[in-house]
Image (cartoon, rainbow, N blue to C red; front, side, top):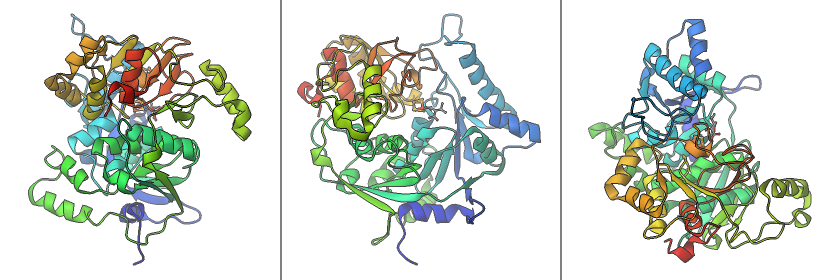
Length: 470
Ligand SMILES: CC(C)[C@H](C(=O)O)[C@@H](O)C(=O)O
Ligand code: SF4
C-alpha cells in the first residue's frame, strides 16, 4: 500500500461506502457529541419518523451554550438569561430522557463545554471519527481523531444511522519548525497561522499539524490549536497521537482499560502519517519567529503581534475594503500601536482556552496583582473548576478582583447572558471576534490567557512577557 497520511488512515477505516461522482461517501461515526443548541430539531426528526437513536453507547450530551455561570439562587432555581435559554436546556433534558441518551447536565460534576468534557472523560480517542453539531468539534483532532462540526439535519442523520454523508476533503500539512519562545503559546501560534493562511485558507482541507513545535505541545495546547482550525476555514485539524496523547488518556473514565488499553495503544501507534505520505498542500511556519498575538479586527485572521501596529487600508491591497470596515467597527486608528489600547472587559474561558493549564497561565500573571477592568474567568468544565479550586487558583482570581464563575461557553458567544456592552473592548481567550459575537456592538480582541490576564492588570492591551508570563 502506498504511504498514507493520518487523515487518510482514519478516513479509510471509516468508509462504509466510498464516494462516487454522484454520491458522497458514507462515513461511520464513532462518537457523536450533542449540546442543547443544535439538537432540538434533530430529536424532533427522529420522533417524527418514529426512530430510536441508533447507537446510544456512542452518543453523549452535555449543556453549555445557554447555561448560566452564576450559581443557583436561594430558591434552587438557576439565573437563566431568558426563556429561550431555559427552554433549550430543558428540551435537551427531555430529549435525552425520552431517547435514553447519556447526559451530563447542569449541576453535575461532569458538565461543561462539550469540547472540554469529551476529552476530559476520555471519550475522544485517536483514530476515531467524532462529530457534533458545533463547528469547534475540530478540537478533538488534537488526539488524532477526525473530528468536525455538522449541521442540525446531519445531527438527525447521525442520531438515526450513526453514519454521515461526506465528500472526502483535501489535506494540508502545516509544519511548525523550531520552538515557541517564552510567553508564546498555542493560541499565539494558531492566530499566527490563521493570519498567514487567511480565514478561507484552509477551505475544503483537513489540516495536519506536524513538526517539532507541535510534538513539544501539551495535550491542552494541542486542543487550543486544533480548536481554531475551523477559523482558517478548514474542515478539521489533526495531530498524530504520541506518548503525550497516551499519557493524557491513560486512566480516564471512558478510555480503554486493561488489555483493551494495550491493544488500543498498539493500534494508535500505527496512525501517524507514513514517511513519504503526500499532502495536497504544505505550509511551513517558524515557531521561534512568533510573538504573543492579538486580533485587531472582526475575523480571527486579522491578528498582529502585541508589539505590532494595526494595519492601514492603504497597505491592505485587495483587502482594503475589509480592513476599512473592520477598523470602523473596532474604532481603531489605522497604523496605531495595539499595545496600550484601553479595554473594558477581559474574558478568560471558552473551548479554546478554559482548561486547567490556561487557568494556571492566567493565574501566574494575576497572582499578587489587581485587575483594572471587569474580568470574568470561566472554567471549561465543572471538573476543571474543582481542580482549579483545589489548586487555589480561584483565590488568586478573586483576590485580583476577577469574577470566578461556573463552567460553560459564557461570554464566548453571549447566549447565557454573560456579555459585553455596545462599544466596549474585550480581550478574550475565545476563538471568534465577529461583529457582535460577545454582545451587540461589542468589540473583541482575541488573545492567549496570559495576554488576556496582562490586559486585565493594565486595563489596556499589554505584553504578557513584561508581566512574567513563561
Ligand atoms: C451554537 C453553535 C452551533 C456554534 C458553532 O457551531 O460553533 C457555537 O458553538 C459557536 O462557537 O459559534
Ligand atoms: S465555547 Fe464558544 S466556541 Fe466553544 S462551543 Fe461554546 S460558543 Fe462555541
